[in-house]
Image (cartoon, rainbow, N blue to C red; front, side, top):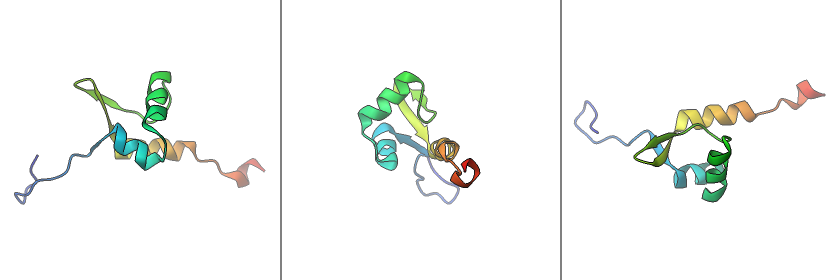
Length: 71
């Protein structure tokens, strides 16, 4: 993939290893979440799970709790 300036740009998709490190969980935990239908949304490309960082961040934001509102 190239950008308009002629340089090479990095793919916006992350693999399981990268997302597991980002979330500070093991790859097996991430795999278990996928199998159970939990965890961040993912795409299957050629049988390999890939993640959009924006979707991972949105999933994380949805997990946040406002403790002041619970009190």
